[in-house]
View (cartoon, rainbow, N blue to C red):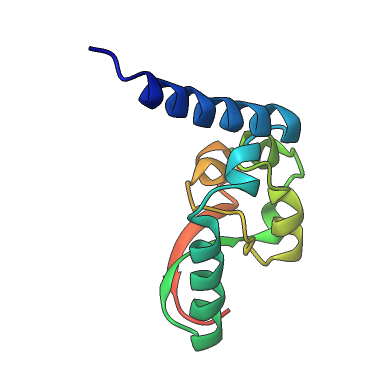
Length: 117
């Protein structure tokens, strides 16, 4: 009635995910073992190389009050405030979730649909 081999495989994979996550910190599995990450990184680099229009983040650096709220709320642990200060909102780990956009009280960070870098 029960598939013992299936349970062993399931709990084995689950144990690997938990161990990697605990050993590497917040979102460790996403950062180091996600099978989609290479496709996202390659796609972003290709998009920038070809200067294709796409959804991007943009920041108005002069209005930032350096509260670091955007960095604290980022689920991928990206130092968003540094990206805002550089006025270049590109990072390989960014999934464009919008948490930084939503948490910025000054509305410094916003979405933009444009081409180029």
